[in-house]
Image (tube, rainbow, N blue to C red; front, side, top):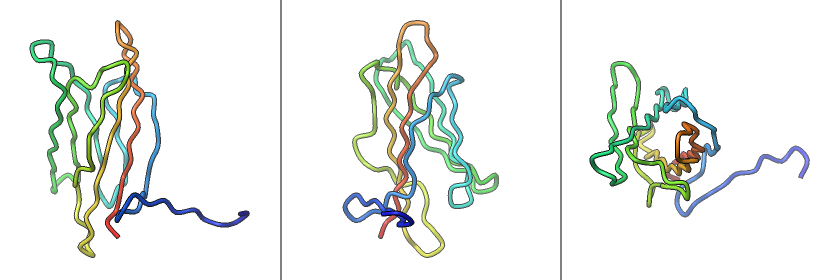
Length: 120
């Protein structure tokens, strides 16, 4: 397999990026992604323990901010399906998924796995 470039697929999507990061400052930026910066922001809501996410796109600043609230379970919290984030110039849909594991307690460390998919 020397010199051969591997490709990865999940159903009718190609995995174009996947990596795991140790995040200490409650923010992770992946850039450039189809001309945008993808920003993950991690928050805690002590009044509501439900895990939730919110996605906001800013075409002027070329940013997509995904706020993940209460993604802090030591066993892990993640998306249950691929979420659409971008439509390419050629009309293909781009999706993301995320899985977050936290040490809990006073630790700020989050282990974050991000996968980006492109429609075939």
